[in-house]
Amino acid sequence: NEQVIRLPTYIHTSINTFTMGAIFSSTTSYKQYTNDFELVIRVTKDLEHLLESGFGAPRGKTVGLHDKITAAEESHGLSSGTVTKLRYLVTIRNKLVHEHDFNKLPDRAGFAKSYDSAEKELKAKLSDPPSSRCVIS
Image (cartoon, rainbow, N blue to C red; front, side, top):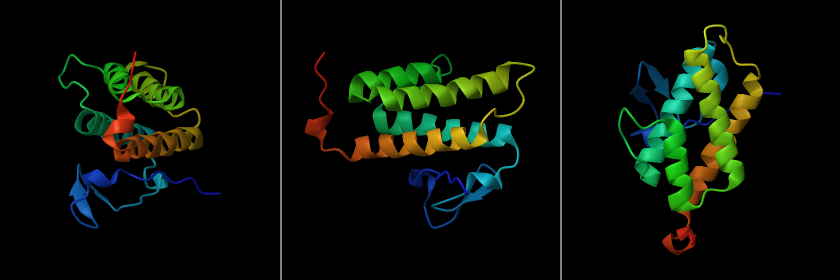
């Protein structure tokens, strides 16, 4: 029972692209990353790029991923399910980076499933016609 994380296609300029020291294909299994740190950082970097480039989330060293999620949620009406998955991924990333005793994913398959689902939902939202993106608050 293999779980697969598809890395975003927007990072590809051809079938295979050399990016950040690794070769990505259009569909790459998360199992190629045996190191949880590498997996989590790569996934969250890709999500951050997608939020900035696709959803107009603010950029800058003082803007965290949770802020970028909130900006995309407000500007594009992301579903609460998508926001929950994104916040889970970012929270795991923050714990892995900042908490001394947190050194591995507690549920690698769950992390992979959350990423795959959130990324699919974000891409689907971007492919919606502009009129369906309107949010009235």
